[in-house]
Image 1: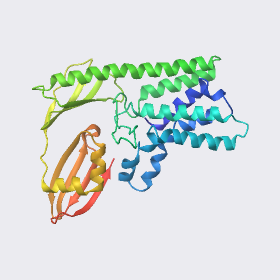
Image 2: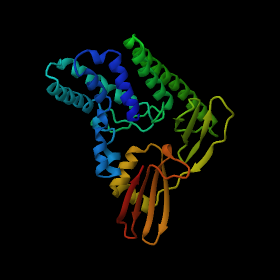
Image 3: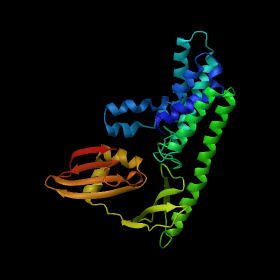
Image 4: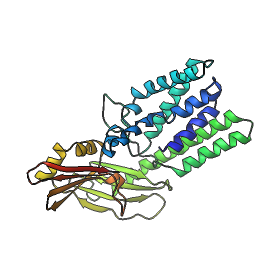
Length: 305
């Protein structure tokens, strides 16, 4: 999720009671709700480095608790009279909720790192969900104007969970409909990706082995046609790019629905790997480009979100 959503969630948790446990409790849970995204520092190195490290150890069952412990220690140094146990509890809740919420999105989270490098993604909400943002913001505003602060905050958080739970039901329906609509029925795997505004509209990708079928499922509207997209078979150039390019290796470890393109140039063959989950008309996004020279050497490699 985006950091504004994480921050509002942390503040709602504080208003629900965590902020009153000890001095610094509100600051602890608010900071912890964003703390796993400290891996943004890898973006200073390169976009490929950010892709490699984002939602990795800092978002895992190993790294997130360590971050929470470090935050609690730091806040205890700042607030001498604070109770460390409650600072630690608030920090653990904050980082845990952050990781849990990131699992809702399509980007994926390596929650089991370093034991398992798999990106787990539940595809329930868009990375920035306006409805969820409005609900959390309304909850916090209500806690400022009404005396039942903890009850209102708890109600708002409960409604947020109910909203995500409802999206989970709609997601399962959309995915099942997508699989049923693919001609031939030979679907190896499929994904339903959330619309940022309409919970009843989902963009779908179905993999039949040799091709992808892409389109939309509108649970409250007329059915739209799916488009068949035949996969390009690997050539020596694309195989070389996949095996020898660190950028391509990082990207393909992340991408669950990669799309291969090749273009002959005067300098060799440009190999492009895209992630169909993040495909946007008229805009290149989530694409790794590798130029393989005539001699098989990697001449250039870039990644772009």
